[in-house]
Figure 1: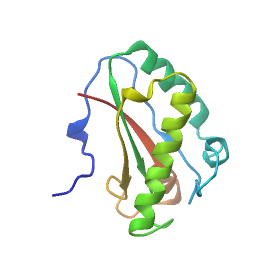
Figure 2: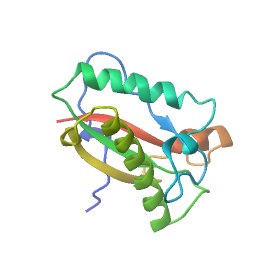
Figure 3: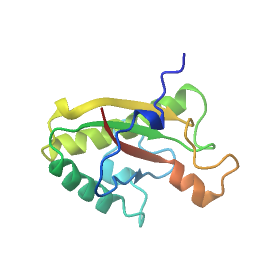
Figure 4: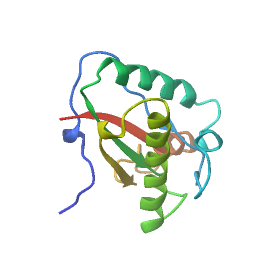
Length: 137
């Protein structure tokens, strides 16, 4: 059975949409900071800030963070490891900004499971290198 997250795991909440945080290709490497790993000019800093505001509006909601990769930056277990580093960096940033660690229902590696496109362009690859925020049941 595949334990990867599915859209059915998400809880629909009326209100602002939680935004994905986009990453540079193959980033973060182990030990890299979140700031150095974010895709420039992607709005990732604003997405983090806006998502933090939304999480503060729904203090009882649990959050599932899922990291993803594109089809060229890694393969196999390396994609899962990179995905997980992305999700964990975002989680660590949120915790450092006041979100209790107990709010996180999971921090997962999605790898290529929900890539943006089957045969992506470079701009679609940029969208696949991300961490998604899901409010969960």
